[in-house]
Structure formats: C-alpha cells, structure tokens
Amino acid sequence: MLCDILRGLQPPIFMQIKIYTKPGCKYCRQAKILFERANLEWEEINCVGDDAGRLKEDYPDAGGYPWVIIDDEVVGPLTETAKLFLQKGLVNSPKK
Image (cartoon, rainbow, N blue to C red; front, side):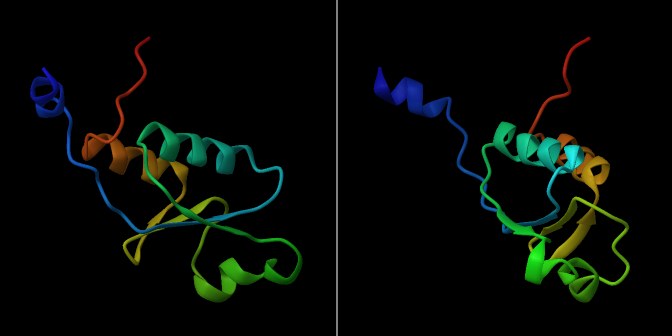
C-alpha cells in the first residue's frame, strides 16, 4: 500500500530561487504565494534600509518588484514567473 502511494509522488524539484521584494508590494506577496503553491523554497532579498538599492545594483535593467532569478537566470516579474511555472507544470491555472 505504501509503495502504491509513493509511486504517485513526483520527485522534488530543486531550483535556486531568489526574489527581490519591497515592503507593501502586492505582487511580491503573490509571487511568494506562487512559490508556495509550487512547493518551492526561495531566498528573499527585501530591498529596504541598507538593501534599498540592491536590486538596481545587482540587476540594472530590472523593471520593478518582484524581480525573480532562478538558477542564476533572470526570469523577471511575477507574470513571467507565473508563465514559466505553468509551462513547467509546477502549478495549474485556476479554474474559472
């Protein structure tokens, strides 16, 4: 019985995810919810205080928050991250 249950489980997916956020950003919260739905861990760089200019220092072409980097490759904002996760089958589109 346990073997039958384990056969249905998918192997864990390992991705090195870094997200640049700022306080009060609703899209940043949505990106973290997306990561939770995909059951993935991430490193958050909260760009406030001493780190306020860190996003532009690290990625001068960044368009805003959140800014997502996966496995050292720029993914970009929330919309691009969500598209990637859908393409990879990490999340499903909500039914209407």
